[in-house]
Image 1 (cartoon, rainbow, N blue to C red):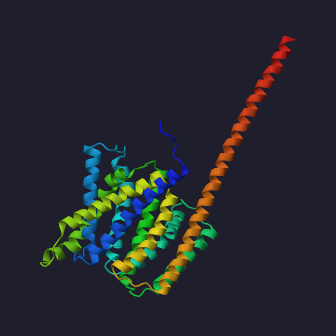
Image 2: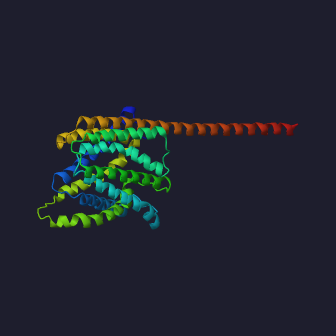
Length: 345
């Protein structure tokens, strides 16, 4: 049996997984921005559809051919009612978020993602998964104010891109809450391969129609378009790897670690996009994002403290129940001894 890891070894292992996830996540974001904004392939639906077809093919091969993981016992009606809506929301989120790269800078897009905790919270309250509290609501308002300041200071503010990005965040927040409902209320816990196996085909199906109607005619008519197939293949591989990296990070560390690492990643992307793509970031951009960043940090802190309080309450209940049981057993044993003594008399 291997000896337990020391605190330093555990920390080094956690940092290793964090670095892997952050590297792949940043790579996918910058890669998508380059393809859509600078390579001449200005077709976000086609790119997203290609990702989903690739993920479906790899996941199907891993499940059905290689047997890497098992299929869930999910009836067709349950799949249509539970998984298909998640696929539709995922398709809309990916489509619109990739479309935003055509109009907005990577820096500003990362700043708007500070709204995600608030949107997830609102969706959670609507679906009965979160409890409405004044403190959390005030925290979410501060995040919104910070993002609004950052948007006001955005030099290249384009309404179409902002609308696409905000809509993508709303769809993504709704999708995340439906996934939580699927896991907690329906009992379907999926690993990343299973998630891709079930969700990717539905996502691809919802992307197929807008692709055929909106982008395919333009692609066929664009005689000057040169498609770099090796680049698209590499892009799809990195997108698939990102899904595995998310599971690796959460499975080996925690969701809180991923949230903290995500904040660091956003800051790194803001600075990286300035140097790689020449994105300009104003003082108001930074001021607004710092306000949102601090509010998100406070939200994560309060949520973590609430989770610890619940864990302590559960632990106390268990200890109290155990003590009561031991006392009852002791009383029963004592009572039995008395009765036995009476019998001997």
